[in-house]
Length: 403
Ligand code: LLP
Image (cartoon, rainbow, N blue to C red; front, side, top):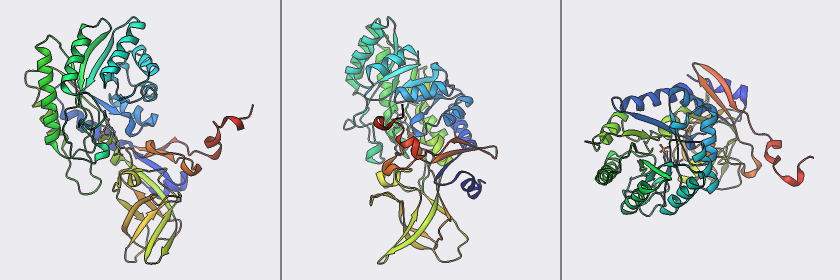
């Protein structure tokens, strides 16, 4: 049991708290699901890019899935070996591509024909051979929120099957490209197995047709996307997930690479915020807290549900309230019409499932410093990022820099 009151007292609020033991347990569950097959779990750093979080996974043997050279640098700093780092993303700059090649990471995940030409040209300049994988867009509806769906031709990600095939042929004939993998990622917070199975089948068929052309790949990268329970979702069991994927690979000897983010960190994270006061506009009741959309954007951006627990001794009946922050936007809320008992200023709310896409999607909007982050591991707590202060927020505003 995490003592949120004690942590809030020690580190202040708003505060992110991460249960590192829960992260380990999730990692192990997924790794074991692929037992008996060569596999790499490459943690999707974007879900929670705190260096201590990445280091925690590094110590367990994880790789890293990165979407910017900044994330690649974080992965290296946190101790992930180069041969377990991959770099995806629809818009990599020349500088990013160059650094990724120089750092000799496992592969660059190429997302367009134009990008393939850039990677080849830069590898030629560097007089080397760049390992690549191609992200295939299998045109499958993942049945998730449209903002986090990525495997349809309407989405900007990856390339269609015939383009992918052409690109593999070019890469295979190039002196500067080494096609080693194939990748798909159809969306995030997936709770249905069927779209994953269908996508894997389509991609496995492409691998077979490439083998017929003597193009032998080593890595079958199935992306991330495993959904978690925010509310009453029925989620996919890692074992069933692994079986569905492995079932499509009959006759193919490939290392499985998967890139989970949310599955590993979401339910390990809590956002702790303090009640400032309650107010009422006509019939409408509000609880105003010290955290805001700049700390945890998911409710504002996606209408996402996060369970909220009040740490209150109140014995009074719950009523429906909107839980809102201090930012000057009507969209600044954590929940609407949520049942909570009457609360006093100073009492705490714990917002759950906040360990993925929480802190990382935060901002300094309204000149608000971002929260501190605390890790709890083996019942011991430690600060892994201090709270931002006013000086941090203005430190880059050049006309006011001290000489
Ligand atoms: N691999 C690729 C290529 C991805 O684009 C993503 C997520 C992942 C792996 C990790 O997906 P996960 O296992 O976490 O589902 N901000 C949104 C989620 C955006 C996900 C973007 N891509 C949210 O808060 O729900």
